[in-house]
Length: 136
Image (tube, rainbow, N blue to C red):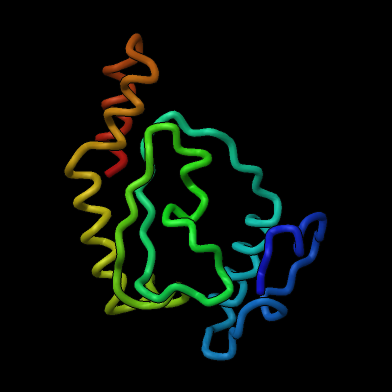
């Protein structure tokens, strides 16, 4: 079981201590190392908008059963949870990445990220809108 506190303060993290990487290429293994180091160093803070969490149907036995996966504590605008195909380790692999992409496109099309950013700083509305629209 991987818990954030298990990695805290460690400069060198070996992903293979936490995840079975036997099926992954050396590049993907390095990506896992970077991912876990970043997770160990990250300190979340409150976000004023709404958050959409993409998760898989499988619910690991050892995880918390919070329906928002802990995001409600940080997302002041609420949390939407969307279920996509695959397992946590495979949602960015074919064919599951297609479901993730489709869900992200629906989120972007509905404009939720734009609304929060523009409400946060109305004096810079046109600059924020141009930046957001150019990012996708």
